[in-house]
Image (tube, rainbow, N blue to C red; front, side, top):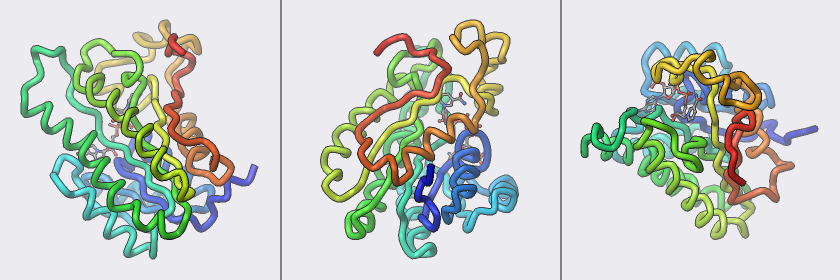
Length: 245
Ligand SMILES: NC(=O)c1ccc[n+]([C@@H]2O[C@H](COP(=O)([O-])OP(=O)(O)OC[C@H]3O[C@@H](n4cnc5c(N)ncnc54)[C@H](OP(=O)(O)O)[C@@H]3O)[C@@H](O)[C@H]2O)c1
C-alpha cells in the first residue's frame, strides 16, 4: 500500500527514544520529511542523526508555551506542516494520595496544554492547505485505568474527548484527528515503571510486550493518505489487552 507520505512534512515530539522514535523512524522510511523533538541534548541529536531526520528541535513540554514555539519553528523551517504527532514523556506513577498538586500541574501541562498549544499552532496552516493529520499518543489507560497510574488515567481519558470534539470541527478541512493508545510496549518507560516482560505478558492475550515499531505502524497509517476517512477515533495497539468495546 502506498501511504502517500513521500514529501509530507511531519513533526514528532518525544521522539528521541521509545515509541516517538519508532514513529519518526517509520515516517522517515515512508519518505516523509521529519522533524524530531524532545528535551534535547546529545540524546536528541544522536537520534536525529541515526533516524535521518531533517530537523531536531529541543522542546521541554513541561514548560508552558514551549510546544507553540516548537510548532512555529518547525513549520517555518520545513515550509509548512502536514503531520503532527504529539507524544510526551509519561507522567509520574502513584496512587491518588501520593500525587502532589505540583505533579498534577506538570502532568496537565505536558500531556494536555502542550497538546492544545501544538494543535492550535498547527491548525491554521493545515486548514489553509486543506490537508492535515493529527495523532495523539495517549495510553490504554485512557479507556481502562491502570493500577498506580492516577495521573495518566485521569488526564488521558479527557484527551479522547478532545479528539472527538476537534475532529468534528476540522473534518471539513481535510484534517483528521485521532488518538493512538499504546498498551505495554518494550521501551524505557516500561523499565522506569518496573514493568518487565515476565510481569506483564501473562495478562496480555498476545503473551508479550508490543514492539515500538508495531505501535509506530498504527500511527503511520493514521497519518497516511489512505486513512483520510478515519477521524475522531481512539485506537489501541495492545495485543488484545483492553477487554471493553
Ligand atoms: N511504552 C508503553 O508501553 C506505553 C504504554 C502506555 C502509554 N505510554 C505513553 O506513551 C508515551 C511514550 O512512551 P515511551 O514508552 O516511548 O516513553 P520513553 O521511552 O520514556 O520515551 C519518552 C520520550 O519523550 C521524551 N520526553 C520525556 N520528557 C519530555 C518532556 N518533558 N518534553 C519533551 N519530551 C520529553 C523523551 O526524550 P528526552 O529524554 O530526550 O526528553 C523520549 O524521547 C508516554 O507518555 C507514555 O506514558 C507508553
